[in-house]
Image (spheres, rainbow, N blue to C red):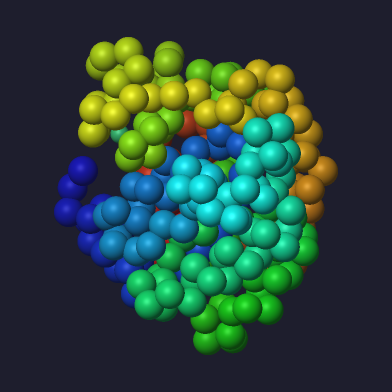
Length: 227
Ligand SMILES: [Zn+2]
C-alpha cells in the first residue's frame, strides 16, 4: 500500500459523513472498519452496537434480541434512537461511517432530519454484489467474538480454524448467518433496503462500487470515490 492511498485515507478524516449501503454480506463492515482505521474516523456499526447491547444485557439489547435471533430487521424506532444518540457523541462530531443503518426508508428520513444542513451526508456508497454471491459469502462468514474481525471459511480463512488471527479470540458463526436466516435477510433487503438506492440517487449523494471483487481493489476504489 503506497503513500498516495494513505494520504487519500487521511484526507477523509475531517469531513466524511458516509453511509455504506448494500445487501448483507456485501463487504460494508470489512471496508468500513478498514477505511475508519486508516482515516481515523468513527465506524458506527449498528450490528456491532446491537450485539454489544445484547452481550451486556441492556434494556435495548433485550428489545432487539428476538428480532436478531430470527434474522429479522430490528424495528425502526429502536435503531433510530440508538443511532441518534451515537452521532451526538463528541467523537462523532466531524467524520463517521454508518454501516448497517439506514436499512429502511423511515430510517433514512429520520437520519436526514437529525443531521443539520452543515452536517448533511457527504457520501452514500452502494456496494453492488449479485444476490447469489451474497448467499455464498454469508454462509461461510465467521465473526470474531472478541474484536469483530470478519473471516470466511473459504475466501478469507483464519490460520488456525475458529481462532481470530488478529486477537486470538474465538470466531463464531453469527446467529443470523445460518442458511435459513440468510434467505429471509436477503428478502428483507430486497423489499426494504433496495428503495433507499432511489432515495439517495434523487438526492445526488449515491456512488456505486462493484463490490464483487477483491477487498484490496474495492478499498482503493472506495478511497477515490470518497474524496
Ligand atoms: Zn479478533
